[in-house]
Length: 108
Image 1: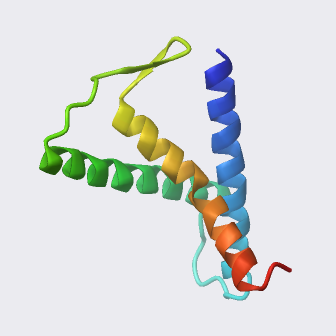
Image 2: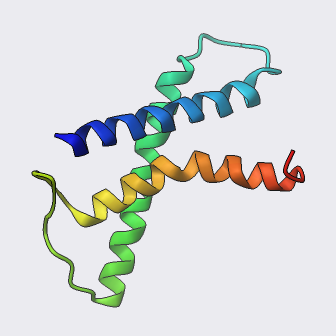
């Protein structure tokens, strides 16, 4: 149960960061058509990113002919190890971007 709560908190934090990044990049653009909300775009981006990472990891694992367990048991929650890794990487991706931007600006 605790793992589900932590997972949802991490997803919410990742979505919040993605919404902030979206708003900052689209703040200067003029709307031409009705656009979806920043939250729906961020959720779509998170799912798309996780899916792309999952496919890349699957190709890598298949290419290297590695054996992974079918399911990973996290506090009663069974999940594919590749899906879990893809979701974690997609969740932390906007925070890594923020850290990189912070250091590019000289730590200000």
